[in-house]
Structures are given as C-alpha cells and as structure tokens.
Amino acid sequence: VQLVESGGRSVQAGGSLRLSCAVRGFTFDDYNIAWFRQAPGKEREGVSCINSIDRSTHAANSVKGRFTISSDNAKNTVYLQMSDLKPEDTAVYYCAAGRFSSSCSNYVIDEYYYWGQGTQVTVSS
Image (cartoon, rainbow, N blue to C red; front, side):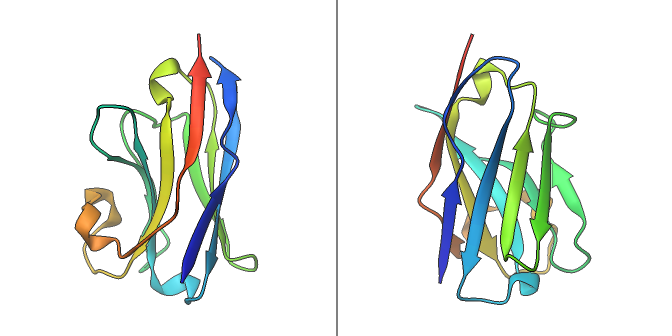
C-alpha cells in the first residue's frame, strides 16, 4: 500500500499550486482520503478530505474558499488545488487514507492507517 504525494514547491504569496496523491495497492473508493499539513513546531492539522461513503468533501476553515480537494478514480489520484496561498500555508503536506464510518472532517489522525511521505510547500511574502 502506498500513497505518493507530489507537487510541492516554493511559491510567492497569492500564487497557486496543485498537489497530487497517487494511491496504490487498495480500492480507492473504500477509503476516506484526507490532506493534512504540519508546519515547523506545530501539530499536524487536517486541511481537506473526501468521505468514502458519499464522496462528500470538507475543507478546514483556514483554507475554505482557497483550497479544493478532488479525485480522479480512473487514475486513483487525489488532488489538492490551492490558490491565494499565504505564508501561513507553509508546511509539509501529507495525504492519508483510512476506513472508518465517522466523518472525515473530524481529522482524527489515528483513524488514518496509511500516510504518504509528505511534500513541502513554502509560501514567501
């Protein structure tokens, strides 16, 4: 089982990025998929997610209206489109997958079995 993130890089504030998470080794639709991020010295926080049960999506208040999660089932890939980036968005971004019945928007880290290696996003002012 693998989750492989890509797309992170350095950008100026106000810019856009699209992160990708390639999912390999399990049935994509059976899992809740989430993006988390962790900035230096801070706890890992949930950013956006897709619920497996109905494919509904959620975005944290800090990114609502700027970040959009989507998936391409044919490619087994989840995307995080990020726009109007701010310096406070600087972090390592991780995608994660888990099978649980509660809403993915709770962002309970222990419910996510599988994690990618992370991709660095740096936003400069």
